[in-house]
Length: 391
Image: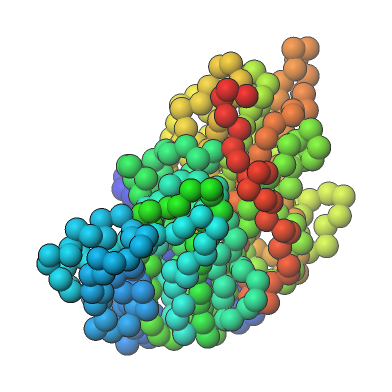
């Protein structure tokens, strides 16, 4: 009976996520969802007025009846991978399945008018922090999501690892999937920038969304990437400067451990709604926050939390950890402001806590209304490159 109850709860969570709308109750007196809301599992038998669209290299606008219209162009000077494979077959035969993104180039993956809701993103690319995703809602000039592509999909250190969670799924060999519901009112734009020195010859992607009305109290997904050495910043700041009413829904940490031994005694803290010296929410340890216990003895990937790389706290440093925690059943709700920190704290040889000099890169996910407060400047590529074992 206990197993059955947990099974049903997990599927209920998936139903909520796949609705494709922001979490209910965001505003005061939350309005009911419209009758044409995108369907989750329980809603699949219910017809609605939503219209599914999907953007890819074969249909870059997502418009009705315009998929697979590319014509082979043998004279193209810098084709994407496999671009010439359909030259003898002609229009309609997988002529433009991929994009090529040259060094220093930014391409627009999505640029559509609303209202609508992004439901699924699938992407295959080089898993490099030189590749930046930016999402712009309602024609804002600054992005609401600005994250290196792999970190957005819970891939840390540019090291592939499987993720099997409710909102992010990463499959071999490097298939990146995102199911965070992303409603937008007037407009949605998604760009991909290649800051690497080399051309990216194959960027495969598909963005599926539903055209149709969204609830009046819908909030927009935001995500922000940071990185620091805890020699300089401890506690490490995951998120700060958030203004307005919102819900914090996820944390991903790419943690590089430089001190042999257990590193995860640090507490996560949520300062909200005017908190200053002391936080409203205070955790009890790093593995506790990521829903583990007594260390990370083995990798695990679950609906809401996981540690995905085969790291060992007692191995010769550096050790690399990829840790995710999705606040789906337990979103952190706040009214006016939010700051999130985590301590880098381990055990010293004298049996006392030891402040650590580790390297942490973080991605924070939250929902709020627009406009949003300015983000810190994204660190330049030289400051985003992961630590390597040779160092």
